[in-house]
Image (cartoon, rainbow, N blue to C red; front, side, top):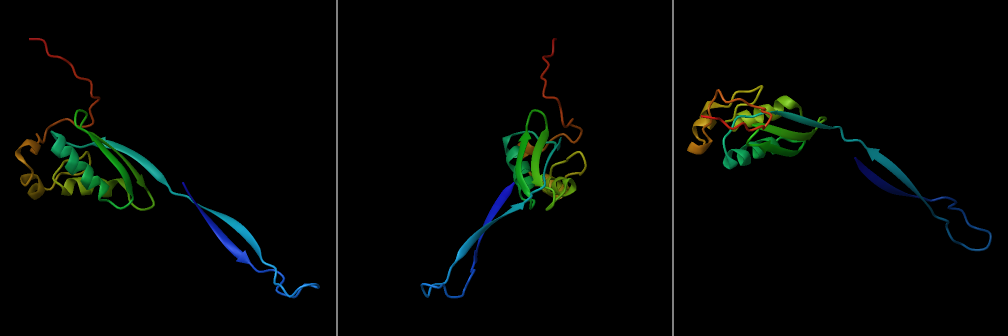
Length: 139
């Protein structure tokens, strides 16, 4: 939440006082509260590596109103905080998709995907929004 303090000079009694030719000045402080409607959102995004992380987070942060974005490479999940008076979830999904990455609600743009570095070309059937629990395979 942001608080904005406004000081307003109110001139009271511009008339003359009985003893001196001075104007009296009073100052009133008015506090105005500006509410920001913050929302937190988590959803799956396909990707492979640290370069993917950088691109995915940059895409999410490019949306007006997004204040933070953190993509977890192991869980294939992004956590986003945003001002929901300035944007919505689909705008964030679409921005990430435009950068070439699939989300739970939007398919990555093919041209952008083709321009990703080789290490970032993920499996389109990859599971997203995983728990992050790593299970060792026994052979």
